[in-house]
Length: 419
Image (cartoon, rainbow, N blue to C red; front, side, top):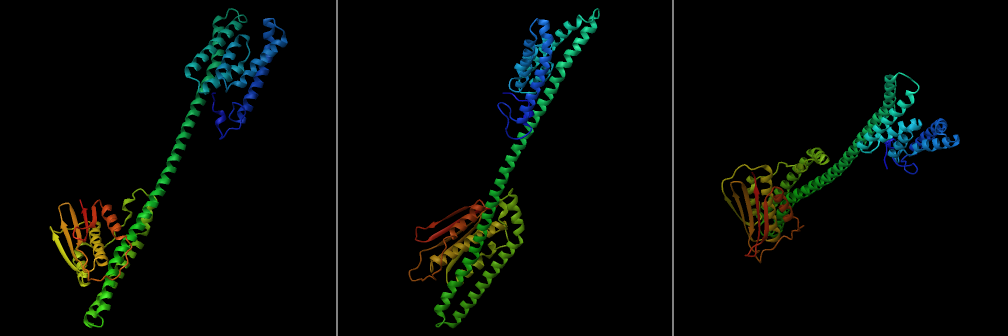
């Protein structure tokens, strides 16, 4: 089946048989009726010339003209019928509309050119032969008149059909491109929504990790000091006073860090939402706030010592200024590892190693076996400490390893690249 595109102006199919739209069916039936009437009228002189009964000529004309109804279904057949009845001097509307339909539909251009040439030659020959007897001695005039009639009845409908067909194909191409772009935009919107959801999830994870690191360490030390305070309150009042002061310092430090974190979250709330909404660059969603650095490790280790832990710190290499996210991650890893030592290995000896290398910084916290007589402070554990450390280190492209040692202790190691 071929189509001229006239029935594709609207969406959907509501026409009968081969018509896609009802309007196209009405148009073709109307053209067929007009063509049938025209050919019926032209069938009367044809019957006289051929020596046939007039009713037979009229019926023949009606049948020939009605063929135009099939122009969308079989345009080649319609044009061939028009060429075939050219000697009978009938079917002018049939020929013109048939050529237009043939040129506008998806028939190969070679077929269109061949049939158009046949129609042109047939019209010229028939016009020349019929006009020659009426105009005597004017051969040149008859030739020009015949050529003009052949061109007028053939070339304009073909050119118009080629234009309409090219315009329809262009519109279809643009429509397909628009549909393709709409699908791509829909996919991009879905992908942006997925990235935004991923960014929000990452931000929630980051906040939970920061809260865990800040609260767990400080509060763990506070619980340890509170337990020591309870143990020595009646025996050594001076030591109890020192432990109470340490508990107060730890609480103030925890509140200060929490306040700073909440302040950064409020300040970065709009940028984070904007990045999540655009979802073009999702890696920077984790906002780097001003936090602890490697220079504060000595203070961190000193706090654990003040809580009664035996901690040794070993530093290798020459320290330097690292990116803020590297220093914060290194500090948090050591902090969380010391917190775990307070929870799970009270009384054990702990060694903190920090190595400054050419393109990376490495840290390791290793504790020995827990001493049997040492009693823990019954600190709760959520099981997220090692997970948070691993996420931090892997997020910077580093290496994280943790596990028990041969001596019965536990070791946490991390390597962070900074170039």
